[in-house]
View (cartoon, rainbow, N blue to C red):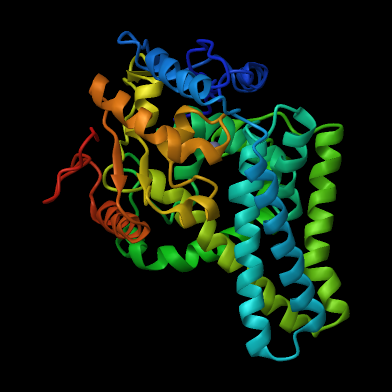
Length: 408
Ligand SMILES: [Zn+2]
């Protein structure tokens, strides 16, 4: 499928619980201008699922008096995570004397960088960290600090992934490399037969790839995946360049004044490897598992059969909802159904609103799926990749012994 602009969701108004499409229409229009006429659309929400869901979640915030943004827990956890990042970096570069001191510090540094992404940058990029735009911008730009462009991430994640989750040819998260086939609608290569095995080291090189090559390629080409985007200009361009200079300087340049170049390179690969595996696994567990739907629009009309909100719920799977530790560490990304339906609510509220979302899904006959633990999610991701690597094109999307609920 050729380049297509985002068709953002039904802009019904809610109080603090708006979907990502709201407030992003200027970007949507910019994308439409860059890519041509709009193509993929969603069915009308005739049953009123999203309206009722918003009413119930709005009611929760009214009853409890809680604010959807600017939560003290966010400021505290941001300080803890940034302190862990600075401490592990300083100890690794300036204090560690032996490999057995350096290796755990490098793993800690990679994990701290992933936590910055999950907890600080992700909420900032979705405007859910604060009511104050400068706080959201500052939080969003911590991504540039750890090596990836917040400008490109906005297009890839906020616009294309969140609007068209799991739609082949639209969602850039399932179109990472031809070596990996995440959906039954993607092209099949023979080598993918082993993708469930080589997937893990491949995840490990992804962070270094976008740090040193992918982002620069995307900006030079003015594209993300199949989509044309406006190239960064003005402050966006300044921040893009500054982010690359600072992150390359921190991870490669500065350490070379104190250590041999090959030691720095090895530890760069270790730190970015840990970062890449953690980021990829956590994001993929929400969508690339057996229970997630991979639906496509009608070929002639390019219209999705489901309404936008129904599609978001059915293409997404929660995991380990009972784990307070994982919810804290992963920035609520184990509650991705709630995140996809309410990306503008700060993630600290997801454990509380998940029962409202689940009940509303049940009331409207919308699929709500979860894995009881992180490991159950990993096992499902492994099985799904193995299945996709062996599924021939034209076999139909879901043969095999285990039916996949919700997928069609
Ligand atoms: Zn998101």
